[in-house]
Length: 104
View 1: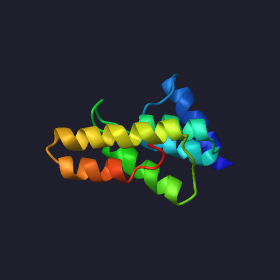
View 2: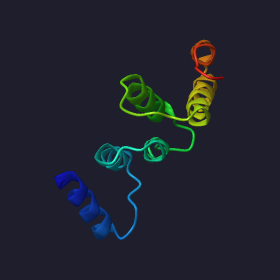
View 3: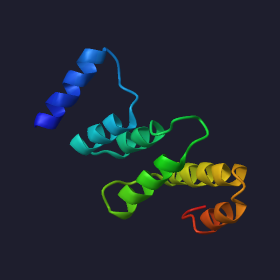
View 4: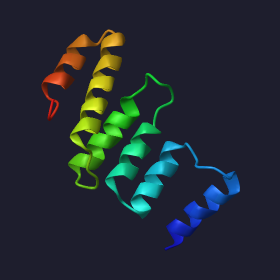
């Protein structure tokens, strides 16, 4: 599979595991597994407090049936993103998110 060889080449050139979210998604798509998807989502943050991209990509992949997340990771994504919205003054959206979160 060419994607697997490209990913191995990138890892070898850097000498370590890349921290890029896009790389993590490609890695997940080459060999899908739930832990790999969760790791990819955790890498998709520009800062410790920015969960927006991880939340939206995670929901997109889960709803499309491409990936699964454990109830614990799902709760983490929902609660962290709701907290981010609340800090930004968007408490109505944070409340909406929490009220519509699965498994909370």
